[in-house]
Image (cartoon, rainbow, N blue to C red; front, side, top):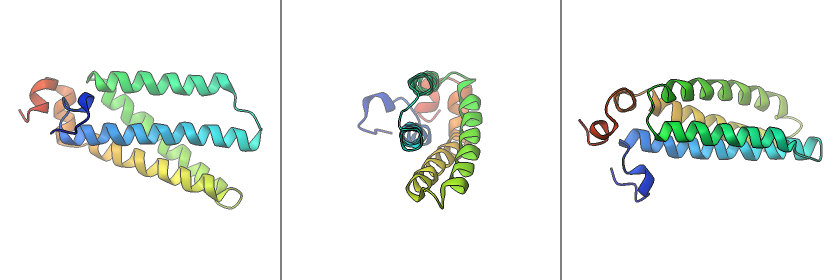
Length: 137
């Protein structure tokens, strides 16, 4: 499938969409992280923020490289993030409804990406030859 985004053209359709959803989810996570600490403490712990950023970049890189272990690792991280953000939503719905809505958006993005990564097309892509799976073989 042609996404008109050069780095996504090597992926099957569902994996490409999952990758875009993950980019949105991680962007939402970093925004939530920044807003949560800046609103509650006035400052963002830079070390923690950069650690999160490094995790995002490394996980995205290995997922892009279609490493066999990257898909299960990504799915595990997605599950943990969904659980964490469900707790944030529950805790912040009364005091900070804007952050709760952002948390729900993050949950939605990661859940949709997980659904796509659990599909047959994604499983075939990450377990076999990336070029063959991208071409439908």
